[in-house]
Length: 126
Image (cartoon, rainbow, N blue to C red):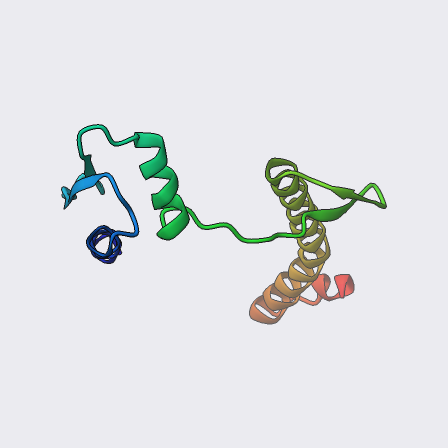
């Protein structure tokens, strides 16, 4: 992934699409990813960074509809609020599912024990 990014930046520099860059190096190792972009003398770093964001995959944006029903009313949420409400929703679902499954499992286990031990006392739970 980073090799393709470095090659793409080098191609943009060679084509002249991004100016002010003297060298692009990949200094990644086992500890992490590191790409070094050296600037020419007198180059404006902010302009180069903005061009990198604009013309490479350094920054990717995508549209997302963040409308959710909160207390039965639609609201536009930020990412943190959206994730909080989603996790609350999933925990309620999991809790309700476990409540409905638990009695069925108890009856199944009671019937299995009754069959295994030949006792008919547990069959009244079914």
